[in-house]
Amino acid sequence: MKYAFPDNFWWGSASSALQTEGTREGETTWDYWFAREPNRFHNGVGPQHTSTFYQHWKTDIQLLKQLNHNSFRTSISWERLIPDGIGEVNPDAVDFYNQVIDELNEQGITPFITLFHFDMPMAMQEIGGWENRDVVDAYARYAQICFELFGDRVLHWFTFNEPIVPVEGGYLYDFHYPNVVDFRRAATVAYHTVLAHAKAVQAYRAGHYAGEIGIVLNLTPSYPRSRNPADVKAAHIADLMFNRSFLDPVLRGEYPADLVALLKSYDQLPACKPEDGFLIAEGKIDLLGVNYYQPRRVKCRDSAVNPQAPFMPEWFFDNYEMPGRKMNPYRGWEIYAPGIYDILVNLRDNYGNPRCFISENGMGVENEQRFIENGQINDQYRIDFISEHLSWLHKGISEGCNCLGYHMWTFIDNWSWCNAYKNRYGFIQLDVETQQRTIKKSGEWFAATALNNSFDKE
Ligand code: BGP
Figure 1: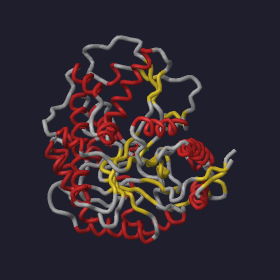
Figure 2: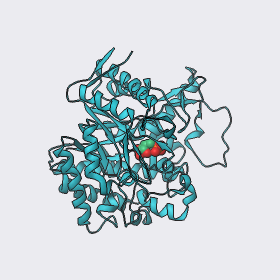
Figure 3: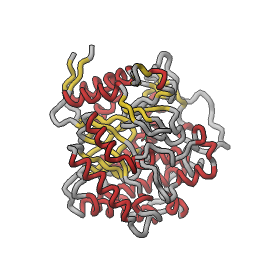
């Protein structure tokens, strides 16, 4: 069967500043954490070991072109642009981002720019990070500076990438700095992130820029083990906490009432100011980026909660390992392509069918060298993964979902937060030692698909 996509469909990939640029003198939370606990990073490889986009941006953009990308998302490093978060703008950073943006536009590749992709200037973390409302203001100023500097040539902005992840990693589950385990502080960080988002949207609207502004959320559909009401309730609460805590404010301009009531009953609500509600209502977006990697399967808890243990989302559900599920064993994530369709249908039916696109989807695989044939990685598994997901996306579009594009994670194999180079996601293989880039078979497949705006699959 031939799967054809609408005209002007966005074909591309995503990356982020910290994971690709290299050549940094300043300090982000990641540099600080790595200097103190290198053992927390796979093979002790830290955030300075990148795919060197800072030097190779020009030739990398040629490669994007070769892969027939018509769009590409990366982020601006707040720390590179404003090293202490609040003070002077670094002119070298302005030059760098100007060159990248101009070259992308010149090559016919529309730049999609994220303002915050997990990398906070350490100076901002030192004053409390997202727990401090001064950091919210500093971020809003940074966003405004970016709009003023680049807003004439960047028409698609994203305030945050996966804002729930720093909440989970940094304040609940110990996989980002500052490694806190405290739900109330996590809720404060999440809440302040929504305020920061809304302030950036407000600034963008006030500047009357030509483009559009949105956010990128990692949506993990919550599937209950069964239709038993206890399982359904467990899935509903997981959905409230991990999806709707950001989805509702940015699309509806308010929090779900049952999430607020739940947190209130456990005394976990962050401190709110009366004017916050108006601000959040103004944070409604033009465009939603959806990152989809895996579903979340849950069941009701089998055991009672230990009242001495810290309050956690898992007080309300257990993770459910569905028999027969298909796993990506390297990352430990389930592969479930229909999830992409379920997300789009949910957006269509419950959120007014917003303009959206798949902003990340992908499959990290270990030791891909074993698949080299005639000098090229033959990653047929990745082609199968993409085409399977695209076929469900296509079904969503054919049923009226407003999905405008598909971006893959990622372009060139890059450094990953705690996993460094363990799992490779790229269309292009990176030799970390020599920095040599080699297009994988999936890169060629994607280039053909983007060129034809369609692909064939049985
Ligand atoms: C997303 C992030 C990316 C990227 C990707 C792959 O959550 O937005 O930055 O890293 O996941 O995940 P990982 O690198 O953890 O394997």
